[in-house]
Length: 80
Image 1 (cartoon, rainbow, N blue to C red):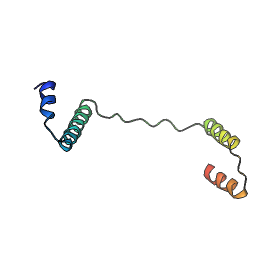
Image 2: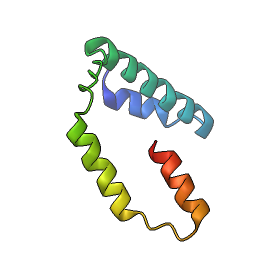
Image 3: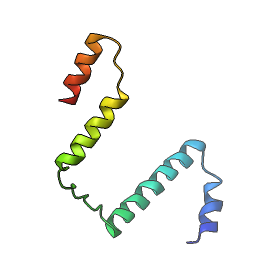
Image 4: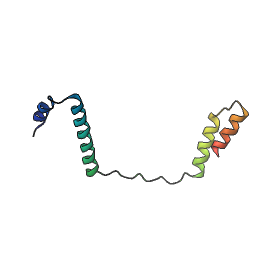
């Protein structure tokens, strides 16, 4: 069965039937793609070095400008 034959047959469908058909086609194509190439797991990167952690903390501290004492306390708690 060719695309043109299916296209002509779909012209007689109602809007709801067309939506159901579209959903079915999407689901089957996604399933086929998953079978061809299963999802690859992303390896977790090595834990950051102490220098990297210090650098990111330093950047966050320099960008932060808490105006109230309570805001500063919350910021420090979030950092720790």
